[in-house]
Image 1 (cartoon, rainbow over the protein chains, first blue to last red):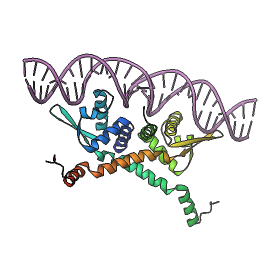
Image 2 (image 1 turned 30 degrees about the vertical axis):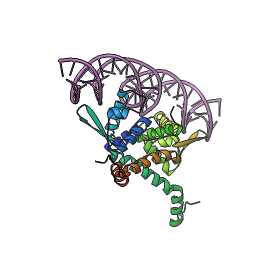
Image 3 (image 1 turned 180 degrees about the horizontal axis):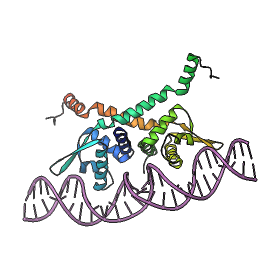
Image 4 (image 1 turned 60 degrees about the vertical axis):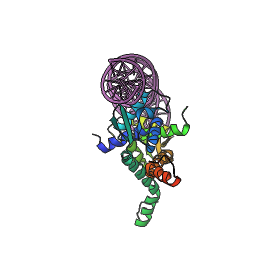
Length: 115
Length: 115
DNA sequence: TCAATCATAAACCAAACGGTTGAATATCCA
DNA sequence: TGGATATTCAACCGTTTGGTTTATGATTGA
């Protein structure tokens, strides 16, 4: 079985792996937008953008609320949190530099198998 | 056409969107590993792991060097840089809070369409 | 009421993903 | 030389992705 958090991180990274979707998220930083307005700058059918928005929605990165015939898209940046935590933790572990750290431990603890 | 940097970011995020691959990257934090050793903890064929490693390699997140019959996998964390920059820039823009910022500008610049 | 607008659904397509199994290749070592 | 080991290749499978076009449903407003 695959953890719920892990699955969410999968979805968020997958959502971010497409330039169109990243651009949509950037647009939504400024303001909530209707689907038609989101689609306007792209050379792509409305249906295609609608699919991208559904994928972003499933990943939790946006929410959509229908008022009348207009569906408003709102950024939900909190959904990025776990993915950011993963990537930052990774960076910190990497910065730790295991080789140097282990060499340090070897010296400090006076291990015998240090050569 | 799609920019080279953008394409690389696509690949990195796509590579990170799979739990198996994230786990592999974490394993490689500690040390370089042979393909067989990478595969060991997973309930998956060696061929499947080999494919994951090729994908990570194409994304630039690891490099592979064959010495004798063993192919060594080495983490290349620099490949994550642009993706991290994107996600961090996004976070900073988000923290900026456009609504508040624009309201501030409206006040400071004495625009007439403020209501 | 009727036409226009907003958005999704449905059906289709090609390509990529994530996995399998079995064969092939390359290298090591006894 | 020949067997064991390390890895990939090739073919296959079902699902997902990213796009299309056409049809449909819901809502608005003159």
